[in-house]
Image 1: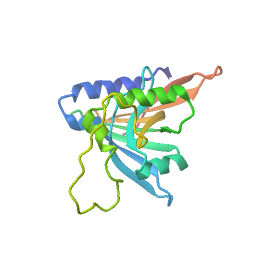
Image 2 (image 1 turned 180 degrees about the vertical axis):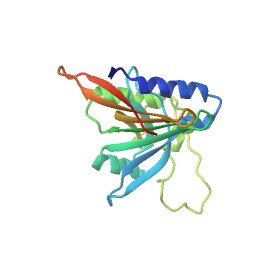
Image 3 (image 1 turned 45 degrees about the vertical axis):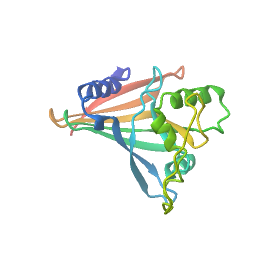
Image 4 (image 1 turned 120 degrees about the vertical axis):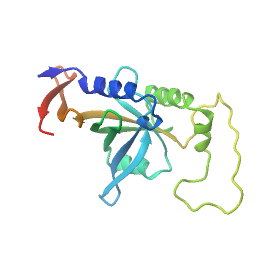
Length: 196
């Protein structure tokens, strides 16, 4: 059966019904580590890219996932909504957009995403390198002009889903959504009910 982004409607509904829970905007992002092993962490959902399926995530380019995605641009999200007992596993290719990107449209999207961040979040990109030992001296206090564009350490990740596995544990329902390309190159989604 041919469908248009029905999984996205399920996520939007789950987000709306869980909007009172701050934790509902966090999910796990798994990548392939440099050693070929899974590498997983919790990240924050930064919205869908305009009118698309693409999921936005921010990261510091000094973090391990930046290099992992540069080498292996595929990832999987696992997103669980505790109140509704819904799980989404979303596979796809990740576009890594940092300041060295040559596409002016992507750089504009990165800047727009940066400017949508709170000042507190932006200041985190000025901090010491993540993952390194903490210096023993007092923490530094940084200042940043609110109108300044993205710092070099700021990176936008855009996951373009190609498969979504949805499980509703309350209703014992499971659906698999798979994207395909039509003859004219447009993306469309098919879905099938599968055993939980």
